[in-house]
Length: 254
Image (cartoon, helix red, strand yellow):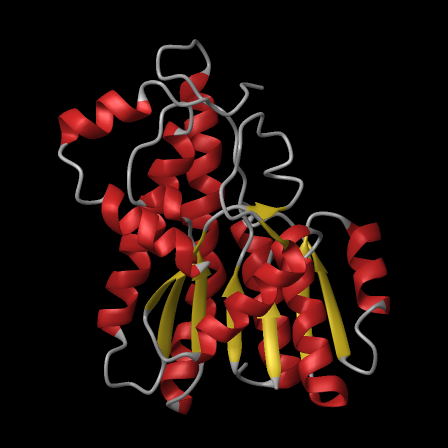
């Protein structure tokens, strides 16, 4: 199996890399991309007999990201699976000075970075008539959550972009999968100062995400309990949504 994954320095990305290394043992060729060289080196040593290629870059650096994708394609050929996992989250306040800079940075990472991760592999996969392109979005993309305006907006945009790509590749043999996790215990969520329902470890989240990728479904919410919760929330009329969520705790501002 040939896999390319971004955001592999920690959290879900690192857990997914370890999960696939256990699953495929010596048959795995994996490109791990992230911002932190030391963490990626450590992760590479944890992947057993997998053939590991490391790429150090931020997904907002589209030139570096394209070079990484081209290098992987040149060395190993068309991957079987690409996971655009890199993302950031921070508390926001729409009336705060400087919030537009935060919004721009979150959108650049979570939307443009996701698209730039998958785009170089579209033509090779379409030519091969196979492969899976996976984007890690979030349940936060289904409703606007106070204090998380930038994050919710970015994940809503990611969901829409992935849906459009899925339709563009319909019938090509290439599957586009949108994964919307709930709360997973990672450095991104540990700053939250409120109760996170159905929170999972990164390892458990990785197992469920991998299972969702293999399920054949186009959009999957993980875990299933969050699917029930957000199925209800998506049906709430605006006045009820506003009344409920105006009282919930908000992600800390930084």
